[in-house]
Image (cartoon, rainbow, N blue to C red; front, side):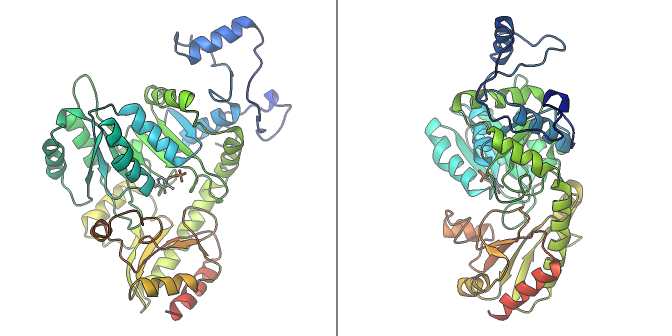
Length: 405
Ligand SMILES: *Cc1c(COP(=O)(O)O)cnc(C)c1O
């Protein structure tokens, strides 16, 4: 992965890929320029062995192309597209594949920004979204679609698993089955997975039947809380479609973002593995603590539950996200957060430093109170994204903050 897609001889022998901070690229001849545009604008198919030429950084740029090739290796995908944020990756997929009158089936809860787009923006284009829960069976999901009155217009199933912040798991095989059930001979219903919470190391949705995988690369892929970015991966055919809109919306990533992510990818595995190891220590400490009620962590799912079977099938690690309830209510949760040393009180996740937040009033503040209750976001719930610090320090500061409650 670390040298894939980059040729030092094309960049003065530089060991590392430079930042191609340029808006436009010089053509060697007018014929070259013509050929590059023909392929880029889809006026003709690329000839065998013909490499797409560099034109203009809204269409392509070496930092982004190399990053896309490297991202493909993690998910064993054919192609990738990188964006200036996770939200632009997700919304571009929704806008590309949904048409007025269509139906979208989505797992509940999804990331707040995604939910807002589904509930507030898509209806403007007469696109309806209906949500399903982790305990819904195949029959429940089929009934939801049939009762919507738009069963012939289901075109996309969007899944976020594990769900944020409670770590509920959705069965990707089931989502594939439901999508296949409603697929028409002329068009397959697509399954797209927001894999931000687990990927790209611990869960590979394409292997479980997904057509597209989406990321907020701001999280684990970036991993240092210093860049906002997104990515989508899938077959060449689908990614060619995903890349159409950015040409006109201009929401592709810039070269500097691409370069930062190339750098981040080199330590992705060591960072994520250390984070997961630390999270295991933190979760076990919390589980036995007298001031803590419920701990939501994939490594603590009871072995006889249906959730455990999904976990074993889909995830290769319990990850580094731990949510738990401090005994009491909002006041007790706030007292814990206000007394945390070293662990920063901030939203976002997947970074080298540990971050703690209060879902009910922060990341999930936009949800109606009854909806919050339904999906387990209680006033005493706290979420921690565990970083790479020494886990003895983490347990020490968490223990001290709990003492203050
Ligand atoms: C953060 C996040 C997003 C949004 O990504 P941005 O990079 O902030 O635009 C989408 N989905 C999930 C699961 C996230 O955690």
